Length: 184
Image 1 (spheres, rainbow, N blue to C red):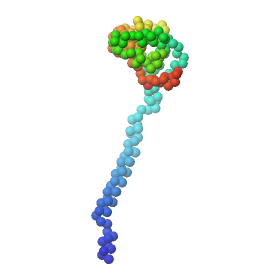
Image 2: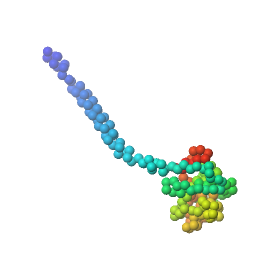
Image 3: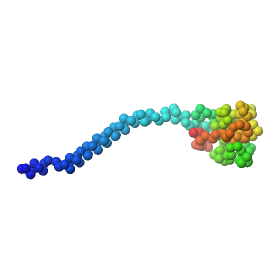
Image 4: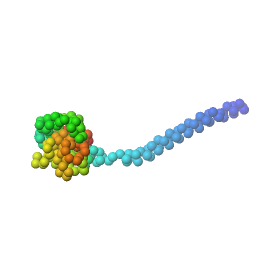
């Protein structure tokens, strides 16, 4: 009988295994519970739906004729969308890039030569250049003219004259169809 009582008692190794299992199970439940408790706080740091909606702007290009330009708002900034004429494209492509203050080839600034899309903010002091309307002054290179300090941009949005240090910025964009572009 004494032998049976000895065999019924758990050994030290069995107790260690059970203790380890209980410790691992409790730790796992604690980690998962903490994750569930913290998820709402982490998720609250994601941008709101209205903010995400402002991050991109779709523009219908079908009504814009060659030589015309429109201004759309993207992230609170004006974006100039110009349907360039063959003469404007040729002038932009035939410019000697090495002579420019901020040298960029036209092919780097456009995805489709017919369309130029740039952020309409002068890189000097943040003014909005003129040149979107047919009656606006466009400067010597036919692009945009900033009346505040006289910066002039060409038909590729590159700085040609005046105090502006950089070209008009090109936002991220992609053509989603032949007549639609998504900015942002």
